[in-house]
Length: 128
Image (cartoon, rainbow, N blue to C red; front, top):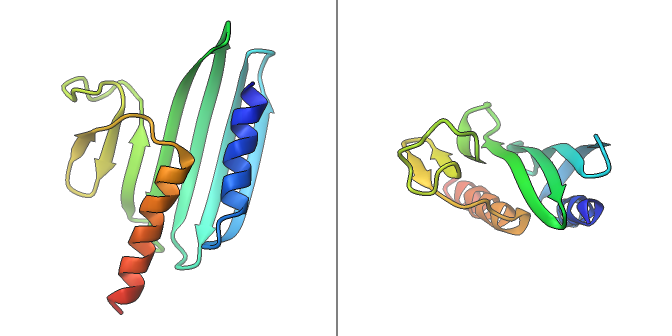
């Protein structure tokens, strides 16, 4: 089951038309835990850094995650994570960092993240 989750992330990213480079590292730390680290570069030289640590507890999955998107100048655009450092956010520990605030959020799926990135890239291309 863990492999299916990691396979899906990798396939969706590799099939994305705006991705020009991706580097995946997948490590199984036990029969019930694994993680994926990925760096993905897009056509506008922005990039997404992914870290998902997956725990399978008797068929129930839990995740430690960080999905960090930066522009070509290494400035953060957004980051989703569940590090427990913003306890006042209603969706604690899940939250989203933007350039101006910390917002409540649930763990996004990879399709939602790529859609958000696509909107950012297209908006940037249209403003040139």
